[in-house]
Length: 187
Image (cartoon, rainbow, N blue to C red; front, side, top):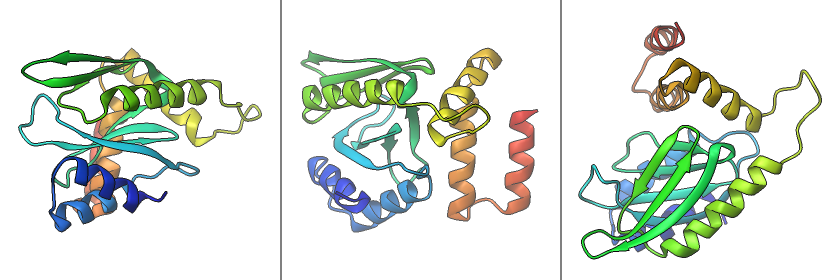
């Protein structure tokens, strides 16, 4: 399965037939792919702050939420500590993903139980992945290191840096704007 197939499946689940939205989602994902990252699963769901459904994409490294061509909202799998599903009359199946970076809630999730199990399995695999030799930094080690930094800084540094990088890759930010914004974040 490749990124396009994964996005197409999720958009069908969300009853979103917009080819433009699909194309933007694929470009958004492909622009933020980490070395060695592979697609695992996808589904449709709604973030509590949005009325329309978006796409939840599970990869070997992260859980991503895509909506309306915006940069993906990433949750590093190595930081995920739990994924639960609750059923409500108003919001349908509610998926709650708890991570060291915070709690993430998605409503009206299609096939929520299956997707939650896939998240739990991928998170276990991410946490038990072999570590590289000392002094070698692997992409999967970057997220936990930055997640720890963001927790100690009291903000969401990793999310902000990934969003900036996605904006830069999409052409929304020039090299100079990206560098200035990154320096402001890092301090």
